[in-house]
Structures are given as C-alpha cells and as structure tokens.
Length: 357
Ligand code: 4GW
Ligand code: MN
Image 1 (cartoon, protein in one colour):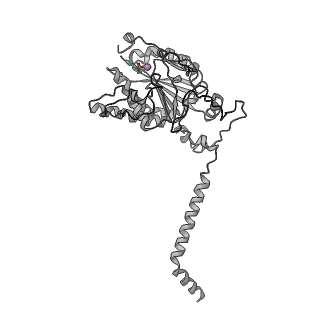
Image 2 (cartoon, rainbow, N blue to C red):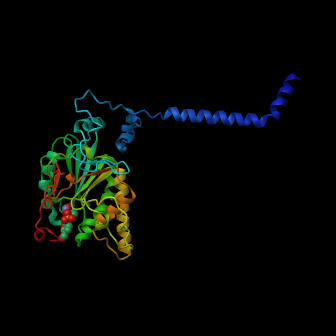
Image 3 (cartoon, rainbow, N blue to C red):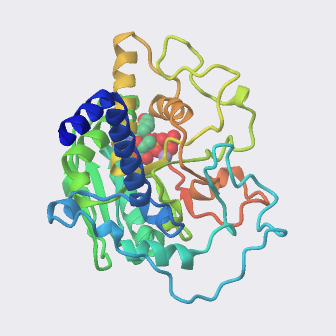
C-alpha cells in the first residue's frame, strides 16, 4: 500500500524528476569538460604544435603531452619598461609578431623546438637556367638555415642531372622532384603554388612538420632559424615595408581573384619567402593555385602573378608571424639603419643570360 502511494507520488512529479536528471547530467558534462581542458600556462606552447602522420601512425597519439621543460638558463631579463626595439613595429593588430633582430632569444627558441624534434622542408624551384643558383644557395643554407635541425631541401626541377652535389650535415638531405617546365616564365612562377600543394599532400605531410617556400636566386648570409616557424608566415617585401597601402602593387582590377581595394591591405608580402605548417601551406598554395586557374579561365593574369595571389590570401587569412625584410633583402636597396642583419639576400642575376632561355 505504502509503496504504491510512493510510486503514485513520484509519477505525479515525473516532470520535475525528469528536469532534475537533465540538470544533473548537464552539470556532470560541463564539469568533466572543464577539468579535462584546464588551461595551465605550460600547455599553451605545445597545444599549438603540429603533429604529422609519423607521430599518429605509430599510435603515439598522446606524445604531444610530453612535457617541454626548459632547463635553467642564463639570458637577460625581458624588461617591460625597455623594449628591445622601438624603431620598428614588432606586433600586428592581430597579435602576430614581426621578427626583427633583437626581439627574440635563439637559445630559448632552440630549447623549445629541439625538444619537439622539428623537421623542416624547404621548397626550391630551379627550372631551366635557374639551376645555376642551386650551388650557392645550398652551400649557404648549410651554414645558416635551421642549423642543428632535420632539413629536407625539396628541389623541384626539370633538370635533375644539373642538381649539384653539396655536402650536407647529418639529418639533412636534398630531395630532387622532377617537374615540367613551362614556356612562359610567368607560368613557371605561378605553377609553384600548384606544385607545392600537390607535393604537400602527396609527400611533405609524411616527412616534415613545416614547409618554407623560397626563391632560388638567393643566398643566406646570416642566421635563419626556428624563430621564423609558425602556422602561417609571410615576409615583408624589401621594396615596400615602409610604404602606404595605396602604393602597394597589389592587383587592382576587380575581375581578378587577387583584387585588393585601395583602402585595404596590411603589408606587401614578398612572393619569395613564405611558409608554415604543412597543413597551412597546403591550404595557402591550394587556394592560390585555384585562384590562378579561375583568373586564367576569365582571361586575366594578376599583375605580379603568384605574389599578387599570396598577398590576397594573407589579407583574408592573416599570418601568425611576419618576417622582417632581414629575411629577404636586396642589396640594391642599400642598408637602412633599422636593418641590423641581412639574413637572406638576392643574388644579382644577368637577366639576359639567365632568363627564359
Ligand atoms: C624571365 O625570363 C624569368 S625566368 C623570370 C623567372 C624565371 C624563372 C623562375 C625560371 O626560368 N626558372 C625558375 O626556376 N624560376 C623560379 O621562380 C626560381 O625559383 C625563381 O627564384 C622564382 C621567381 O623568379 P625570379 O627569382 O626570377 O623572380 P624575381 O626577379 O622577382 O626575384
Ligand atoms: Mn627571385
């Protein structure tokens, strides 16, 4: 009798009980989620890491939880009241650092990146006569580029036999990828986007963590290390870093996919140095190569080819780091006071001899 009465009472309040159970469940769920993702400061570094397939395939899904702990180190204290650079912008309005000499500690960065065992791929196009630039490029890269890290130089060329044999340090190799050449130099330059996206998907993703895409008519003359690495990065063009957006040589015809209006634009980025994680570089190059194809179908070619499309992409997908012109300099521009280092410099070329032959 008594039990019946109880059940009757409960049945009358079934809606209340139902709501109570739902509330308890929601409470449990949010508690669980909150404590599972507790955001402690030391996590913020390795949460942004990129884990490529080799890590995932061997089943070590949780390897990123391995602690990255800096040893006791000796370096000068960052001083809020005395910033290292006041002569140049070191941070964009979307909080991407701009990398200038004096703003970073190579020692701290190396401690962090070394513990992650980062692997870097560098894409280099040497089509037709541009193979002559490979020797100096590779020799100087061995001295200055990502020293102490695993590096794959991906050389995309139509002349594999002309790739020089340069002695490389341990953990570094030249990977020759045979590609076709194009009749028009504009197409050689633009097709880089398509080729990088194809190889990113097919090969780079399983071999390296970051991809750096550069011109080959260049040489390294000072340190270029892990300070450049980030999800997506671009480089300030040496000819335009001080300029006003209206004066940038963006594509100004609205029919082009690369169109940027005169009241838009952050910086003018150089086509000769960009990069990021393999995933982000895939997104960027895939996007740009499709934009180039759309332009072609519409009978238009952007004024500065792939560089125009890169600029449009980086306007609408803001880079997470920006390299100062230290990372892409041209000695024809002289050496301004703000330029403390010239890390990667254009090699003068005899246009008649080298181009389109
Ligand atoms: C005009 O006759 C040419 S040929 C313009 C570029 C050419 C070219 C470019 C080429 O024949 N072979 C080649 O491999 N490239 C690649 O495109 C190479 O990686 C080169 O660094 C990149 C961009 O061309 P570029 O360095 O001559 O462009 P700028 O003068 O703007 O640095
Ligand atoms: Mn160049």
